[in-house]
Image (cartoon, rainbow, N blue to C red):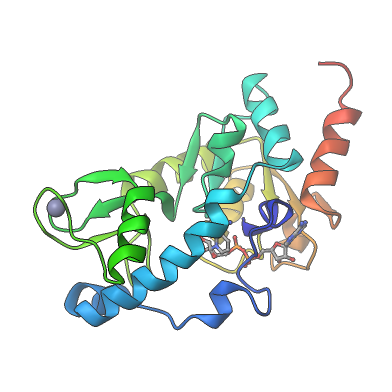
Length: 228
Ligand code: NAD
Ligand code: ZN
């Protein structure tokens, strides 16, 4: 969850004063129907992009990348849209809410890296159009009111059902369906470890409940596992 990226300088969803709390929500149906809503969406996303683009993976992301490379974890299921797990070196990342590092055309499904379109927004102060079809270009993230990618969700669900251990890291575990995945894992016999600063609704279902910082705690677990 967002908590693993706060130590990279990206505020989580509930931080007071963060970009998320200052902006009005642009719902998916508004985005589809209104040019004004698309301009407002791009204004918010273009400003947010500056935070994302400068952020770097922290010791928490790097520890998980090391565990995947050593075959200790199957991969990472995330609600984060910042792409930091991949930058750290994780190859198997299921992004339930998509990625803010790319744009997608809602009309022809053409995709590209986001950077040039953010520049375009700042030049023209208007939502950029798809270079292929002139259609509605949006960050490749899931907006409020937009369906999650069914294939990614199914793969994450299967991973949860097959897991013998699930670590729920830096998530308030209140945003579904991601928050359902630890429940799926436990229902299929997995041990659950919750690592989060604040309490979560799944704490009582967890074998271990850790409340330190994500980065430091993961690094300590890694160190305690001994030589690589
Ligand atoms: P959340 O904001 O609901 O919860 C984050 C949790 O992390 C909080 O309970 C907080 O106590 C904990 N936390 C924060 N920093 C921590 C740290 N350093 N160590 C330990 N715990 C820490 O996050 P969520 O459950 O992932 O839901 C957020 C929603 O907003 C998702 O839909 C996500 O797509 C989006 N979002 C994404 C990003 C990102 O990509 N980095 C950032 C903000 C929000
Ligand atoms: Zn298009």
